[in-house]
Length: 294
Image (cartoon, rainbow, N blue to C red; front, side, top):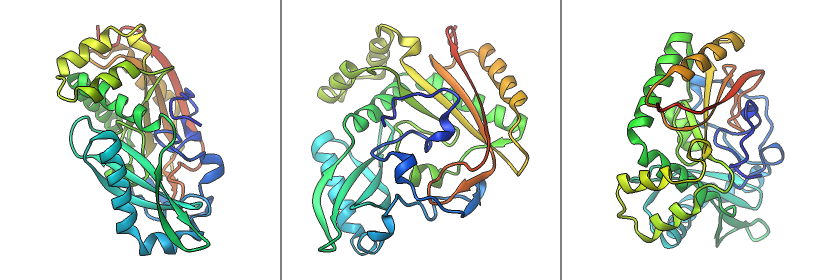
């Protein structure tokens, strides 16, 4: 399952930011431990069969972290820090965050031999996943003013309608979805922008103006990126679709926001601790905004 699969109005099916390495339906522990969104900081987050590697991961956290950092530094020539080391089936998923621009969260997988109870120096990632994560960050970097406006817009809408986002700790420990905030995340659509990614990797000193020009030249720049606004109720009050629709109407009228295909989802207040997913009904509306930056 690729993170670039953008199921508008259906984001409740995914961990915020998609399915980096893990097929969520089949690979996230299902527990009954519910936590209020405002109290969730990633505690208990684990992938399926992680109980079988939990002890090994705990004993070798530093080694696993260093393997992940070394792999990323060598392959992508970027400095990252480790936000979480998560037990999984025959592996540990290491949640990473870039230390400088382009700013993104991502993950890699460090293999574990459960029979020998040994951490292996084999590090991998889902094909194309990290590259997509970096592309979303490049997009946000190229349109930094527009994303600052989006930050203000979502914060204002949340306060107006009594919604909240995830805690910063939950984002960093459980989300590996490229450019992501407590209120929203990005998905590259279709084939994404591989040429821009390759150019950046070969010329990391390229400036933001040049990056923006490249994105503007994309065949469909206004539908290149999916922007999923994912909010939560502040208490046990059910999500209200009327409020979602009012946010959409405000979104239509908003000026100075980044181009993109927008989706707005409001979830309930409860999070399953192990999976990091919202529990209960969610209400979502999607819309393609053609002239969002007019």
